[in-house]
Amino acid sequence: MKKTLIITLLFLNLVSFSQVGQIEYVASFKNKASDYINKELENIVDENASEIFYTLLVNGNQSIFFCENNLQKKSDKLNLLYINSKLIGTIYKDLEGKIQIQNKTVFGEEFTIKDSLLSYNWEIDDKETKLIDNMLCYKAINRQIIEKKIENEKNEIEIIKKEKITIAWYCPSININAGPLDFYGLPGLILILEDDIFVYQAKKINFKLDKKTINKIKPPKANRFLTNKEFQLEYKKLKMERENMLKK
Image 1 (cartoon, rainbow, N blue to C red):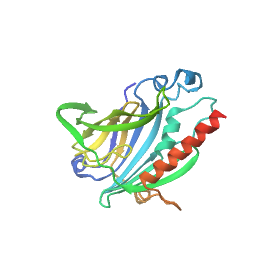
Image 2 (cartoon, one colour):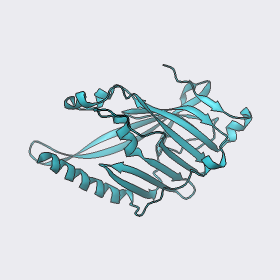
Image 3 (cartoon, rainbow, N blue to C red):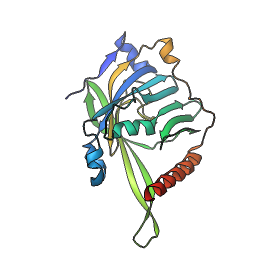
């Protein structure tokens, strides 16, 4: 089914210069949910959970990205989109202060990570374009090397390197330096973002925000903030504890 992008504005000529906006994204699987899980888990994954909604609020150099409704419907099966929304949580960015704060839930534990903004080395392809609801968009690619430690048949630890590719379609006529998740750094709003599993696509844009909505763009509060490095250590510890519990 075709998704129509709805844009709410007063004067069309103001769109090009707007740095304030509310963008609603719909997230879905790039392919079938069963393509991303082990065969043993196929019977417990909810294949009908096909999409989930996120909101991006932007006011100048500040933005916040969060799930519109992350309440899981009652079901005996796993909703992978819901689980992913908890892992994403709420992401606040301050481009001027060059900081990012993310509040998310992992293994039932809540974490708030505060650190420097991630930097992205975008490869912009000026020749590859796409019309998204009559708006000219350009393709940009971000490549990231992911390292993963695995135990081989000899009980030795190996480091496997894999390239993760993220594709963004951005619109230069919408002067907002932001997009889904923690992605930014392109000369225009990211309307579509896709990685190897998920696709995030803008479905509604509103350039007129009231004071109540703008006030939502603020950093998450927490009693304890972790850096990305500290969070990774906490995550590995929790993961090991869960794996040991399953072995018992």
